[in-house]
Length: 216
Image 1 (cartoon, one colour):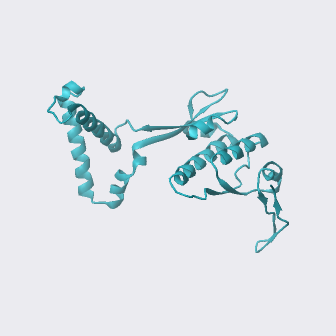
Image 2 (tube, helix red, strand yellow):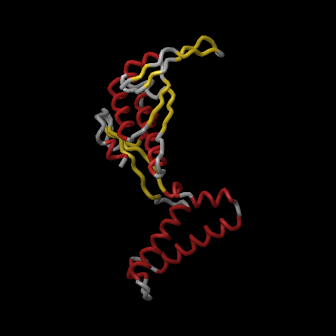
Image 3 (cartoon, helix red, strand yellow):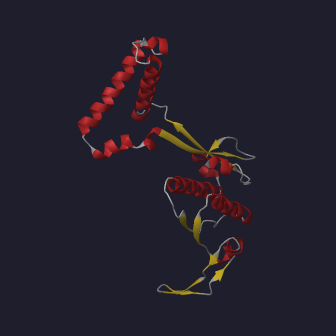
């Protein structure tokens, strides 16, 4: 659903979330492979005794998977570490997360590989989108959520055009957003806000609130 919303945005760079199950040599990937083996053999056997070779698993591969899962279980038991158990119980450790970017210079690039080459705006936009996606997932599973977000200077390095796109994205997610922004961003942000509260810093211990503006 987030990717569907992102495709509507007219940023010069297109962003897309990419989430995949791990497929490396980690313990988490081994557990996934063993779960896949159990799922496939259970579905195909339908309660009957079957030969795993008929399902694409050779006996030595089955033995390897059985040994791997036993070693992982024994490791967890031997350590008897609650923190370690929680790691294995956390679904996020079984997936890899990436943002794919496409523009005139990069095709299907990974944000994690491009960060060092991007300008401030080039990272501020995807990082704000990551924050929005995470909060959207949390709010979507809650009934009558206020969908409230507070962001400190979120558009410092964005152009007015990109700010408008980001604000539209927030609206499409039904967020209630409170921005803390410097005066030079008032023109680009203010017209999209329902309420503007100007704050003047007299000194470190003296802040004064100015005239509050309400927009229809």
